[in-house]
Image (tube, helix red, strand yellow):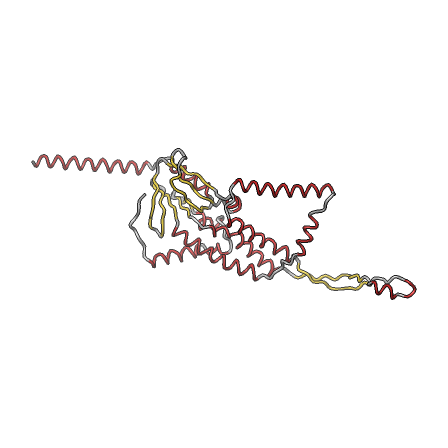
Length: 329
């Protein structure tokens, strides 16, 4: 490990944060490490060969709540009202039937009525947002290891398969009652709820991404044998090449499957038996681990040759100085 003495001032730190904030402002609406925003969250592999990636806290997995909240808000705002005119049948009551002379049954009356409704049912807009919140809380609440994920997922699939079989045999009608009960749950809302939550969480998301890009950065230069960790452009630790390998690790399978490979990178010894360091909270952890493994498999020959040349030059200078001292004596 090594440490650099280079420091930047407070004004430069604020300027770096502001620059990163402007570069990541699109995450306010689309908080995903893909397309235009891949560099802002997942890092970059430059054309010059430099590799850079960032670590993020668990707050980074609120992306689904933010994005779906924006979509639901737009859906509520743009959802048009449809007016339909049709006949409404009024069935007679029991009292009306008894009052009819001659024992004749009271006839149902048909009247025309105008009905207004939304083109997209409000429940259809509200449920995806509520499910996104529930799923995010489940993923943030604990780490779902592969065994627990398989057990819970397998149990859910078995129950669902059993319901489908019972429904197909005709002995039971399960899905329709569930649908009717769900339909009656009053989950309709206005556009303001998802809008305010996405606005607030999106702003915090941009701040988080901007801060992590200067405070928790890992860089591997194109020509070099050190993987450096930077905090505000100051290297506080370095990992040298030689006798190390890398492996992606996912403590939570939900974060791996549904949040762009969010996990850790383990730095192991050459025999993969001892963990030397753990880089936590990295998007596309497997991709970065494989890149580091490939880059660490070989040392930079240019730097090695330069170091050997410098050592040879120092030895020559030392030998010449010793000869000069001997001649002087």
